[in-house]
Amino acid sequence: MEILFENLLELQFKQMIMWLIGGLLVYLAIKKDMEPTLLLPLGFGTILVNLPFTGAVTQIIDGVKEIGIIDILFDAGIANELFPLLLFIGIGAMIDFAPLMANPKMLFFGAAAQFGIFFTFSLAALLGFDIKDAASIAIIGAADGPTSIFVANYFNSKYIGAIIVAAYSYMALVPIIQPSVIRLITTRNERRIRMEYPRKTVPKIAKILFPIIVTVIAGLIAPRSVALIGFLMFGNLIRECGVLNSLSETAQKELANLITILLGITVSTKMQAELFLTKETILILLLGLIAFIFDTVGGVLFAKIINLFSRKKINPMVGACGISAFPMSARVIHKMGLKEDPQNFLLMHAVGANVAGQIASVIAGGLIIKLVGALL
Amino acid sequence: MNIDINAFLKTLPVGLYGMGGIFIVMVAVFLVVKAISSISINEK
Image 1 (cartoon, each protein chain N blue to C red):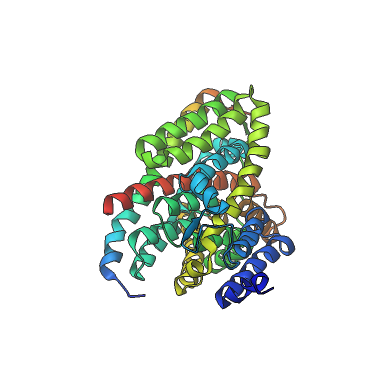
Image 2 (cartoon, rainbow over the protein chains, first blue to last red):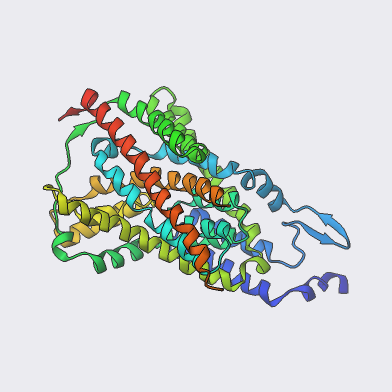
């Protein structure tokens, strides 16, 4: 009889705390609809990997190494960066770059809103994090889950679990974080600025050329970003070419869904109590929030600076959409604009800046890998 | 956590080059999109 309960006696207090954290992630996913596609598998996986002598992760039991399925998945899909890259094909196939191509000025807001990444990088290094870990933490500011996984895994950061939880949680919290920051640094009059949208149609040839050209330019300047931006743009090319509709639909649905299912539960191997329950985790969650705040500040202040020199004023809230959290950020800013002035339709500008943020965040990921690599 | 000023100073060029690099890519993409637009985008 004792043999049935001996595992129960091995249960540690830390593991029970991780069950609560896993349960919280499942609750947030189901009840609060916070990034459920990732937080639910991650929450369940957190419980799974924190059972005593769980067979889901690799364990040494009685001197014998037993390989766990989640670690097999991690080695097959995360350690070699396969899953995030495949997911990028699906994401690329979902994005319509037409609002950005019709209004290419929005590209610069995508760039400005990456400020939080580099601010947080310096802050994390100041707080004593190793340079590689600081870069991995900073990339939470990319507001892009697959990029965060890609970069944190590239630097082999031991904090990858906390980084992913922070990245996806704050992406889900964009409707709370961004309006608060924007209200602090803009006046009501600035938030009421109306913007005319150029009524242009983007022809098919331009939509086809765009992903190819972006890949080449990004590859020439930030070669480490080629895998990320290349797969993103490959997905987009499948969407826009017009002859691969079936593949485009598969990339958007089946491929993206399959990878998402595996991604969350696979990453949970890094949610084991001894890796996650550290004081650094709390600091990482705080730094992730700072990254999102300063992304927003960067985008808004850049728009304000442009307004100093430009005749056509830009609503500074649009600058905040330069983060990669798509389409959440664009929707939030559109709603804020309507709240300030019911006739102020910012949606298309906001979407343009938001998709620019998707490109910029991937380039930021590539650049931080390259630049930090040169620093080491 | 120990405050590490030297590590902080080492990261500053990364921030500068990083932001600079993103803007360079965006300027290049902007110019190309403008060029494509001038050829092929029609105003409604």
